[in-house]
Image (cartoon, rainbow, N blue to C red; front, side, top):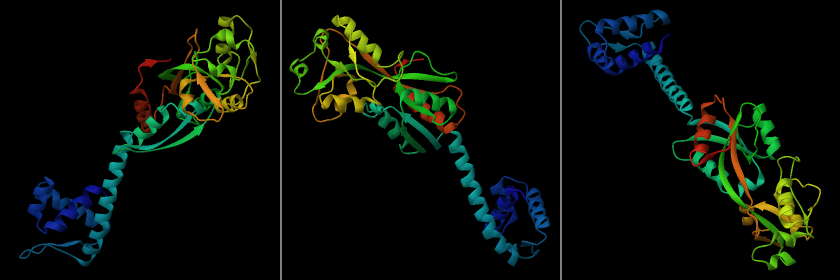
Length: 300
């Protein structure tokens, strides 16, 4: 049974006049009659009485069938609309991963707001993951978009766009000696212990700590690594060292912690949006387009 038969039958049932119905459907009357006969033959029942001297009328079976035909046509129209919207990326789901520090930059919430804008029915799931775990999840297909710290190399099939470059600040105990500086000289950090959430020797915060030591003329004392920047700030607030953190972390209020720039060294860190370069899901591609809109540089 073809949808066009149902559509033709519904129009004939509304007009109860084959010529007018044919005009509405842009069909020849003979073609319309052939469709109705094909439908009746398929069902094995007469749907319309075609009186020679009176207007056509629905049979009892025709009236019962009309209600179901209209529901079927309405559902088909809804299915078509959903399919078209899904193809445009207006419907669907995406899984997003983010490092904790990205949540305080406003970049993650900005993307989520764009996905909930009028006309979009995208749903998103969010999960906090460290940068290495996000790269693994992207490659495995467990997440679709990641907000993570820049890496010089990404797994095969994963690409990234720079979303934000921000200054690195020094987090210190608010009543400690470094808090007395408006900007802290690197040489003044000789006796400090550095707390850092690094995940490997090559790409983590350790490199920037070594830059501070090299610039200040000392070998830094680096504490065992912690899980993330929030854990690092918690230790700083408890008087267990200092930490180099992205400037967006200064929005976090942890008792006992103050933030100061370095006086004689400028360090920066980049937040990137990462995704699979061969992504096929229209919904995920729509999220990626929104991700790239504010971007001003590529980190690939």
